[in-house]
Structure formats: structure tokens, C-alpha cells
Length: 79
Image (cartoon, rainbow, N blue to C red):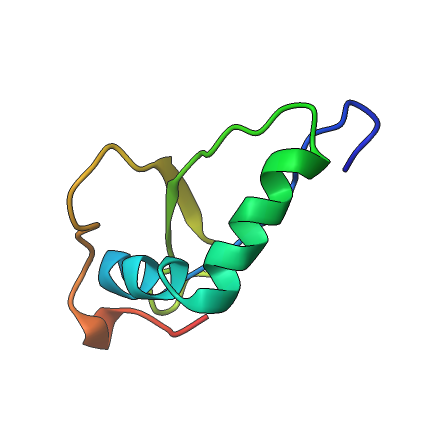
């Protein structure tokens, strides 16, 4: 935890589907159960990261639900 007792863990997946599959895995479920007792506060925030081919940076937008839509795969670089 940080000095305020917050969990600052970060997970990045290529799609919402992959995130759902990964977060339901046995190891992730076990880690979530441990986290509940380790931190004084825990807020789950979700964001969409996008990187367009040829761009040097990424855009970060708060995820508001549904599958994150982006440009066609040939327009993006894999991070």
C-alpha cells in the first residue's frame, strides 16, 4: 500500500474480454480476496488506453462500460 493505505496495482489487457477472463482466473480471485484485508481503501477504476500507429504517446480515457472500441487493428501498435 501507499502512505494512505491505498492499493495502486495496475493491470492492462488488450480487450475487455481478456480482462474479464483474466480477472476470473484462480490466481486473480485469490489476490482480490487478499487485497480486501490489506488496504484501508480500495477503489476500482477502469480506463481505456489507445495508441495509434505513428503516434509517440497514448490516450487515456475513463471506461464507462461496454466493450472498448478503437481503431482497426492495422491502425494500432501493440503495447
